[in-house]
View 1 (cartoon, rainbow, N blue to C red):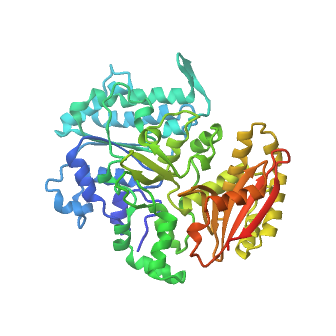
View 2 (tube, rainbow, N blue to C red; view 1 turned 45 degrees about the horizontal axis):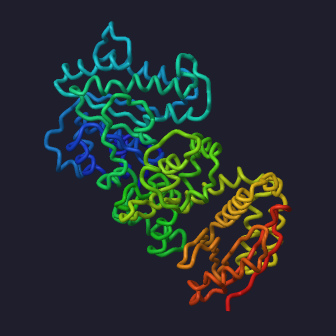
View 3 (cartoon, one colour; view 1 turned 120 degrees about the vertical axis):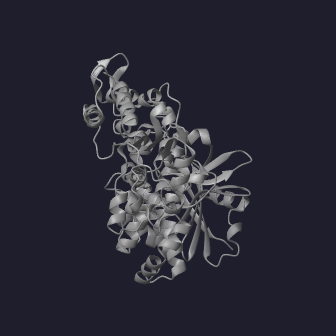
Length: 532
């Protein structure tokens, strides 16, 4: 099987014999029931391939679709004038990049369909082109825009000065937004000439302020009918890649069932609506089959700089955002403020919907899978801890210590680690900030021990356990206190019955109480007891 890794051209995939997971039934439903759409999906999730597939469909290239679902659905195969602009692969931190990209696109359109010498704005120029394309071909035009928001994401929160300062235009972000407003004004000028429009991107358009005065496209990003329009569903995985799953399992010494479960843990878990349909990351899945190794492929391709800038500027820690419930308005509509990183974390694919309560209409958000969790935590930890204090070798030592049940050694490792970073803590005079610091520190440390199941603030019928760490032979129930004693922490574990869920567990269960000092910035009391 040939894997189209990095190939986003539908015609090349079909002509050169690469595997294609058939999405054409959904595409036919899309094109036959509406006109203007918007789709938000994380990077490397197949948005560009979707655009390419639509382009070839509207060009009437029936031969490319033989044997696919749409071959039996479409009877006419008309050819439409298609206008496709792709903002991928451009660096819009360069002040004139966006202007030059759009100028080039429009000039090529005018070369083919004619130019209105009196038109000066982008909207007016394109309106003339669309009208002439409609007249020349007898069919309305199709507009496909890939990564429509990249010109804004590249410069978001950078404060890069605008090349032209006028009125409210002070930064390059403002400048690019104004250019896009002019470009997208085409949609309110040419409605009668439009057959189909699709815009793809990461951020939801409604709060980006580039469609002023324009009737918003139908947002299918959270429409359960189109959950699997991009990405790979479990049904598709098991039917298309059955032989590859068996081969992957054989190479890694796993049964077929174990291989499927491992693939789910690493690359599954994305949900794009309250329908809760599981979607696998296609980039990681195809790489895994090709290299026959379970590695973190998607995350290693790079973290969007706009997201890291947003995280650096806000005052929330990732542990205070993960595994919490939110109304849809809190994470679906993106508002570009430094104080609200949650929508961007979700829309970029680092959080996904993990649960839905229809009674209260709230969603639980968390990391989609191991790949994303491990990559994000490692990235945040490398920034939070200095290089000389945090290293992979230190994590390996701690992992071995906990695996062997040596809590005395873990106490020394933890105390030494915190002593080396206490300078950060000692700057926090507020009691609440001290507590947040220690909670975040422990969250990062224990989440980095990704070989084991780690549950932070695990809910029970009696309250929330600060942390539970499950190893093959041991289970550790942690309770943390600030400026108190370890005995108080142990007493809370007993009084709240935190160990009860593990009463029938054959592993050895330890209750661990840890108290921190705001004065010294490290552990001032550490005690543990086995559960009887």
